[in-house]
Image (cartoon, rainbow, N blue to C red; front, side, top):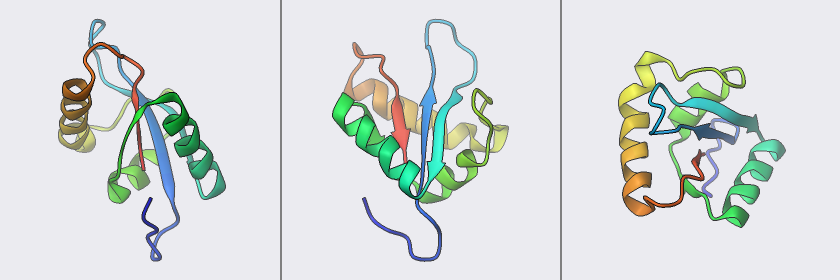
Length: 97
């Protein structure tokens, strides 16, 4: 994971059930050491991780179980599409850092 020296490290885990539809929500988020733990758990569980420091910073400011804001829809939709293409059968979710 690349460090961004102008910003603190952030990680956000999103959950989305394509069968239920609706907007993805924040499953976990954190900065610094907590962000590293979120990433460590994601890697250990085989969850796909995508780096986008700016989007992670925006989403990390949200409360747990909050829906992603409309201004993040396009970026998250692109990530979801990428993740679903990589592993359609495993609906584990993904982490953004």
